Length: 372
Ligand code: NDP
Image (cartoon, rainbow, N blue to C red; front, side, top):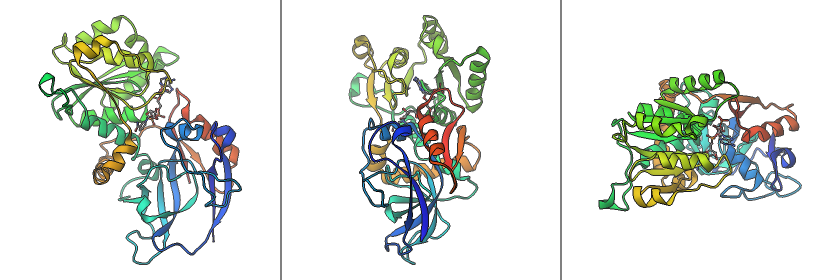
């Protein structure tokens, strides 16, 4: 028998209130289509917290499969596991392989699990750390998909046509939440693919700290970095005119991570026929859109949900993950800053719960990742 621990919740609420650490044992007889895995690293993403709170777009089923006293779910949408044993000697997966979830919300915040083999995707671990691999499938994939799929519409002639930004063209995109995992990935892909980026960050406590963050993003490949205080001020119009050479170089795409005033300002910065893709709502404020932008500039407002894309394009997702891991391996894609939370057999429930609770906090040094 394998002794295992998992974070679980039986009802929605704040992670600090509802998460419990559950201990259970896993039988050595594994179903033939399943594998026993051990978790190596599992990130704490904003979506995981929203799922625990019950405010996310999908809910996890509550079950008693791992012997909890009440039907419960294991949170965690992302992670990397090592295969310890397979249910059948003919299985495609082998002991020692690294796998990431192929399906959404399989529950990664646990030391060990038995998963159906088709819930997992094997990755080439060569030259990569568990933390790197654990972070590949949500943030970088979101940035990758949005940048590759959206841009200005073809204009009035193809009213419904939206086309991606042209790789290598130096076309502009603009994003808020530029310091997020998704934002940092978008900066890097933008650079690699010959696009130019305008990046909005929240002001830090001091000018020095804001400048240091600006520099960090420039080092990743950001062309322009703008603190929110300037972005939301009157000055912005002139600065934007300067950046776009008085509108001769229009901004074809906006990435909205935040909502509220920041999203409205993004929309106002866009060029004719541009697309504003909303993928996050960190400010918890609705998006207000001036009607004039819709009518006179024909701007398109769309939402993006990676889970849907993954379901609809399984093969494309596999290629994308391999592509991004390859860039990491070649040193062409830098890791987002992380705050590693060590989880071993003696780690206390409160330590893990607190780490999860910090998952939605702003102004952090890095994303929380459970490492085992
Ligand atoms: P991270 O945890 O890496 O970063 C969070 C970001 O949010 C930080 O840049 C932080 O800014 C910012 N932030 C926090 N609080 C606020 C606030 N009150 N107002 C404005 N900004 C705030 O996030 P991820 O990159 O993992 O995720 C970012 C967003 O994208 C989340 O909403 C997430 O749910 C969403 N997302 C959506 C996906 C989809 O498919 N639709 C897929 C992946 C992510 P600062 O640096 O200044 O603290």
